[in-house]
Image (cartoon, rainbow, N blue to C red; front, side):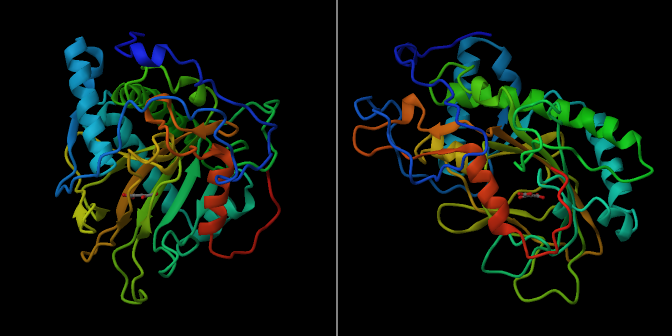
Length: 371
Ligand SMILES: O=C(O)CCC(=O)C(=O)O
């Protein structure tokens, strides 16, 4: 791996992942600055600029010359500061991988409701499984979302210290009965996204004037979720302000989103205007989550977005991949985003994600937990 630039970051050695006792909850406001106050700011805070369309970056530049990598880093830096979203082209994942995954999503969502409810996410402390419509309220000022979803991800080994302790992602997946091939086929998608996620995090590290492998220790054993989403056509019975997915920010490191051709994703720019994020051929959308914003002292924006359901009689499918740091990583400002002024906040990644799950779940009957 090529370490580009960063004489400054090489002078610092404070970015090791801090581990805490598994399961201990750390509040995001309670943690201390741990003696970082004397470090100079490399990347100053600058107010975001208003954009009317999401920028597009070419990820293949990551494998090219030093100048090409610097160009990519600068484009990502601008995108993350201004809107927190960008399209990625030349991401390297073959189209067939997405075709297969969409076909599997259709097959899963087409199952009878009682079969899907056998694998309800409410039965899983690891937050894996099927979520029926109206069981998540991403915008707490609006009615529950119209989408249905299915979450799964790479399964840690059963002797993993965090496995089965009731923590998000560190537990078994739930697969629909009679579909033994689904785990294997969907696993290929997750593998492709993990590889891509690591590449994107390298590009983001460069954009923050850090070594390109800066985030790797945090992602050694990450919280990783693939979420299949199905949005119905906008129903006649929808309540006021009830849409596919209410306005929200994502919670973790980055999200990599594949969407079909229907459209409906909107992102709020700095002027408060909702701009469209339509599907563009052969691209994916990457957006910054709350933890990455925290890592940067909010120089990078974790931006509100929402999904409107279609007025046409069409279902919309999308596949979100949430690539979040390991549960017990303490997230505090990266060296290039520390200032002399304020004590940086810090929190554990897992505690933050667990709290967001709790805060957005609509009250449902919780059956026996599977771990
Ligand atoms: O389906 C989409 O386009 C966005 C999904 C999303 O925002 C989410 O799952 O957090």
